Length: 151
Image (cartoon, rainbow, N blue to C red; front, side, top):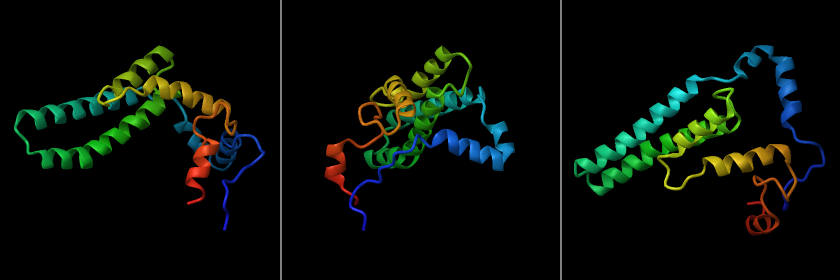
C-alpha cells in the first residue's frame, strides 16, 4: 500500500493531454471556445439563489425547511456558481478580461465570503506552476500531506 503522495518529475499534464484528446477527437475542439451564454447562466443562478433566499425569509418558513432547501437546492446552485467562477477565471465567457472579472464577481455575490478574485489569482498561478510547492495553491502543503497521509 502506498503511504505517500505520488510525486512526478514530468511537466504539467494539461497541454499534452489536450493535444492527445484533440488528435483522437478533433470535433471536441469546437467546444473549446468562449461562450457568452455563460453570462446568462450566471444571471439566472444569481437570480435563483437570491429569489430563494427572499422567498424563504418572507413567508415564515420553518428553519428545518429552509435548511433542507439550502442543503438540497442551494448546494447545487452553489456548485454551479463555483464552476461558473472557474469559467470566468479562464476568460471563457468573454474576450474582454474585465467583463469576465465582473461576471465572476456577480456569480460570487450570493456567497457568504467573496472568493472570485482570490480564486482567480491563485488558480492562474496553479496552472502556471503546477507541482511547485511555493506557487501551486492547489497542492497539499507538506504539513497537510503529513496530516492527511494517504487515507
